[in-house]
Length: 463
Image 1 (cartoon, one colour):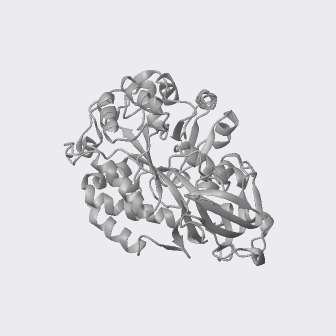
Image 2 (spheres, one colour):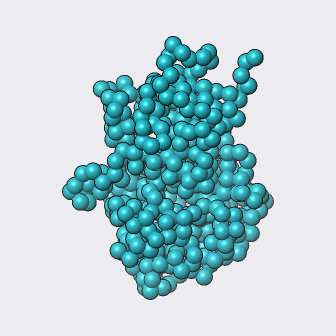
């Protein structure tokens, strides 16, 4: 009898398995979207029929811990003038003002397809573009959320929609709250309770699921955008569902200064006082931290999501990755502004940033960086059953070629080091999500021409 249609099998030339082992000739079997058996040392001559051969190094699918899909439209164009983070932000607002559900569906689908080509099988979408251009609600107040979920489905990737509370236009230097204005009006829900009511209306089940490949989480945009008194409904919403709770933290020194002026507390202390830290929480960027902040975050056992290509692009600075992990945080990585979409680059830049800051090598071995991009990232997004090639885990795979100009000459014993420290998204050849092929031979199997789709979608929204 032939195997059930849902049953799959792959034979990996090399596979990175739990325990940081790179093993040769690994037979990987799956059914109903999950791995059922992983057997190293299976010779090609002994393979059953119908097995897909994977040449290169096969890893678990990559998890993009932090994404703003619409920022992809800004790639390259903000480099024309020197500018600052704040002038970049004004250009970002112009793109936000131009989007509607149709144009965002086209853009996000293309962006998530680009992510799939880079080996990303799950994305954490930090979503705050909720309403119409003047702040008027759509007939379905979650229409933009459903647009992003549909975009992920079309691109073949799993999504955690991190529904973001965004209530204030920022803090002034003296600590005063600024009202939402202009494009920011689309982000607001009035207050924390209004945000929670809209998030409830999305209709997730008791586990936060919105189908087999989508789930919800919560996000506090930042201490600039959510006053401490409005954080309680967001924290309570996440706690009731045991859902991920993410927040931008201390990305800019100006944010810290304004927060201290307003609340006499650092941003990390404000989040802690609100109950927003803990093992299901993720702080994003965490660039400018005091020693006390590092201890506080470590004691909470939260995740810290670094987005080094964006942090470099915006001249944010180099975050204290080594100190945070030593204190007890787990690291994840994200593409954030989509300055590039390459989680291998994000992962290695965590180590390279530490080298630049300390003038010493060897802070994070390749296995630790790979876990930041796989199992840690998935867990931070509410998918603890993903990110490992092991029986019972979600059947997500990415195979990186070892015969490209960047990876040629790789040795089996150091193949993971080659991939983490030398390979790029362009070297991804094969991607599986939930047992289903999404990328084959470097080509997206669901979106016929990803560059053309990106080009059309970006041109449609650029002011």
